[in-house]
Image (tube, rainbow, N blue to C red; front, side, top):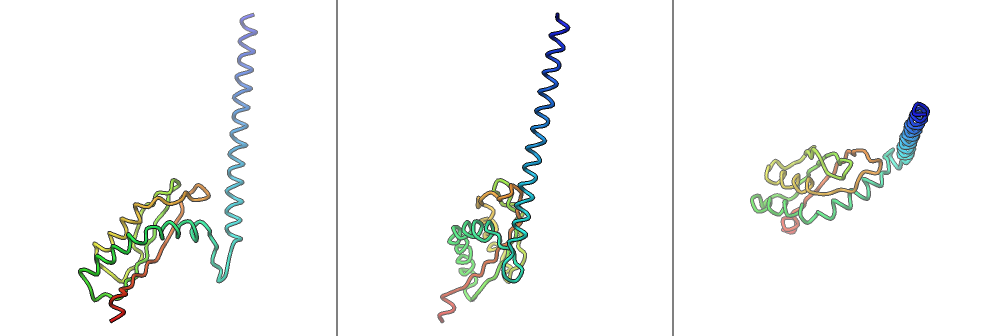
Length: 156
């Protein structure tokens, strides 16, 4: 009798393990298919001049950066205090947005200004921003350009 109940328990346990493994495989395959479909949709979503239309970057990221424009402009205003003759500054940054929306590895791609305090100020503001989570759940590469203009210098 004890042998029979052990066999039944063993069979039920084996069945449950096999069923859970199968469910895990099916869910994993479904997630892979969803990611593949999203990637294909992104590849087909090409606009003028062969550029990909990416609503995450074109809307969500840009709007999030716009919310911090005043803080970034403060970096430029501080630069003008030490260099009042500057008329315009260009800076391009790139970074990775992690799955949780945290920016990582913010770097200056190019800039026509070399003032380290100014550049670090802009980098630190971007590094403090909490971005929307990337849509595929994968980290996302982003670049952004800032053009600062000294409106007071231009009016002279």
